[in-house]
Length: 231
Image 1 (cartoon, rainbow, N blue to C red):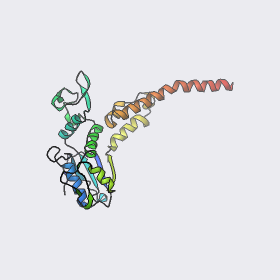
Image 2 (cartoon, one colour):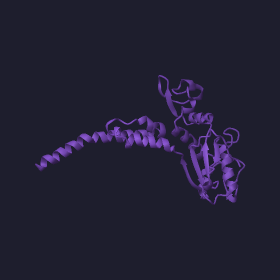
Image 3 (cartoon, helix red, strand yellow):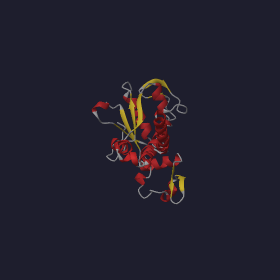
């Protein structure tokens, strides 16, 4: 079995095969995911089967080492806050000058890690000498033009693929934003949304919060006018 076993392994993305996927195809996908990023043109990620009996070896948990994530952050030009300078494209060679570099494990947001892994999965190709799919010898492929994910989709071998959520963290965010009485009267901590979901979702939540508060004076005025008209 070509998989990665480590107690410190942090799964970030889940790939679920359909029940019709041949074992040889699953092994091929894992080998391409875990193959060296430089030498074998693989994704250089970590992957292991989900071990619950219900998964039936159809679910792969995908993560990455810290060094691989940092390389990915540089390749994707992810912007991080530079000390005393603002947002700057991340560079490994200049890592010590970015805020939070003291604890490199938490330098990248979870959403950024998942974006890096997703980009690698999307752009992963077969090796140059591979022209058929292991387990499906009748399926011809073009290593240059076909990605692994496109091949799997064309064979209906992908049941699902999604980022893995932290249920406890989601509950905390849900409580702070929707279930706490204080959230009605105090501004929510938008940084919790940003740190978990990323900037785009955080901007959306910030806009909704601003828009909701902006409607309050209009709503009060409208209610007052309705009562005035009744009298």
